[in-house]
Length: 300
Image 1 (cartoon, rainbow, N blue to C red):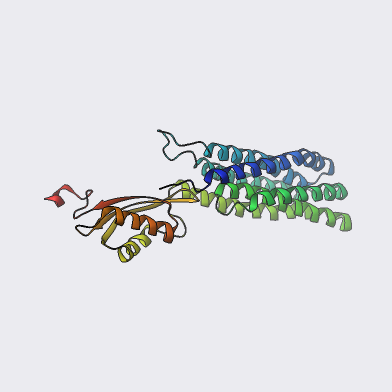
Image 2 (image 1 turned 90 degrees about the vertical axis):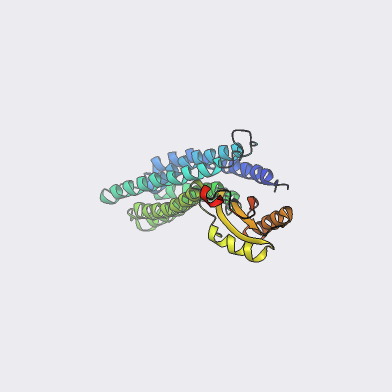
């Protein structure tokens, strides 16, 4: 049975989009650092600091995507696809210290306000928003079924929100002169970043601990196979996990009625697993009578 499913082409597309997004973020990053220092804006510096880590995170995601395209070998029979999940997990964790640093600096700015050049803040933030929208557009459309792309998109979304906060802060400062708006909005962005960090880290963590996909559990499979596949008497030792977030897998034992055609039954089981549960790769152990893994005395 073929298992190409165009994963290689998908990874190549992800790689190109990550590269373009990294170039966009990296190109604007230096200008925003300089602008934040010159304007005295924490919102702009927070956004710039996040962009620095985003540039590194996008680089990590790009490296993981490239490694995932390497073919399987004798020592790594499943290939390198899980590198993308590891990168997503690391990137999700990396969002946490960013949000905490922004909140810490905001607390100091609220207690000890500093002058902020609203005009420069507003101009740079508007340009940053355009860059972040372009980068997010590259990543978002391909993030639903790939946790690595979702983690990269979460970093860029944090930047996008940071730019919006900086624009709002710049406008308020220009019109009212009220500088506390700058650190206050930075805290709001930090909270949103923490939420993204939680979501991405939990999703990647589920894959790393080999949890079942969200849409199916091991308990769901046995009753369906027994009810729908002819000559299947019992299904047990069912394990369902994810190699990556888009590649669910399963192993199971199926006991058939005596005289059943093993090939037909196995093909029926695999077809149902694919069509009903989206499991493309399954290992099925066929049994007649006692399970081979049963205690020795059961064979007596």
